[in-house]
Image (cartoon, rainbow, N blue to C red; front, side):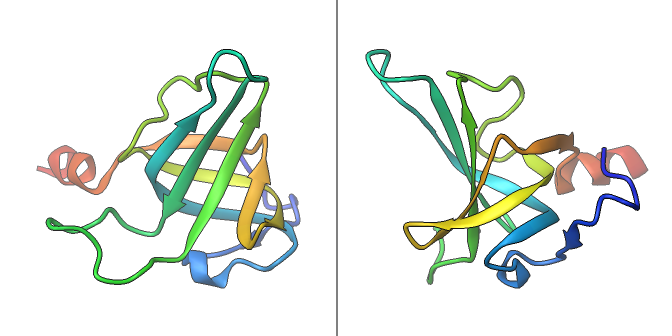
Length: 117
């Protein structure tokens, strides 16, 4: 996916994302948004550092929004999916946003545990 020379800032936590620039990070899809059929195709996913615990979150978590223009669906991306993503980040209405990111679907924490046993 990303080479060592990509120049992307590597962030281990979403709260470390810069306001602008190229980034490389990992997160879990918390929710997705698909626009109605009468609007231009646009698929968006909101990512957080870790899935919500049972019973939900007690306080807001740092998040980033990934937006795929021209797409009604992105195969493999659903709530709970773990992604490594890279792209140019910008602040859109107070939310860090990356348009048309490069991404890689990663095994989730549960899947990794199953593979090691």
